[in-house]
Image (cartoon, rainbow, N blue to C red):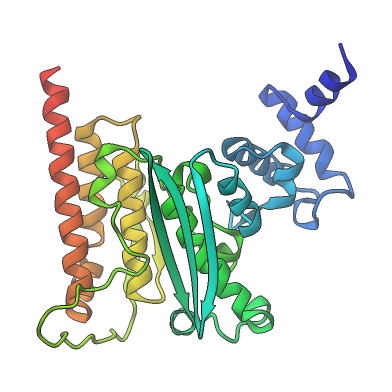
Length: 316
């Protein structure tokens, strides 16, 4: 066996036993980041997620953070994964006043598709990020950039990131969820045209007044594989309606794209997602009718598409 092969085998565990031994060894090392020292379980999760997105074990430990028990990836490493993707066609980042912009271009069927997302200081204030001890106080422009970049990367290259959010975003929340955004498929077209911030389309008449509720709506995520068991629900308080709408759309994508379930099961899971969040949808309808109408329209389109697929499965 050559030295190169031996080295590769040493750093690339191939069985669960080898992975556990590898993680336990690294947990005792002084060469791993402090957040992983003595935490073999977190190391195992980070290495596995690194494998999922294409990072070798040691790179994964440097670039993947386990926050609130969930993996996330630092924004610079996520961008590196995207720039190495075969369909990557360029990107641009800039700050205009108090708004950070990120545009990522991707080749889709021979055409260049540009995805631009933004994150503003106004959004950061609504999310109660401004003034927080740490990066938001020391480097606010950099944090705005990371938020805009995170949204653009997840929307433009969900297949490259496998649903992992950026560590910068995960650190902003006491309780964060994993963004379950699957690779593109035909059913997702009902959601693929979503903007970074879901807003009412500007009507020819004056826009209706948007009333911020006294308490922001909570977001409930049912267990995808046991959607009838309410004890399995996870509740996430949201800072604003915009973020709630993004979470609903992202989770709907995850339910639609879960190929281990039949179309009937995915349709049922999607309907449960809406049902357990009906109270929050009512709050949004009163506060921001445009955002509510947009969510319901996308939901109905997805249900129809799943029904068509279910009929095809029955016919087969």
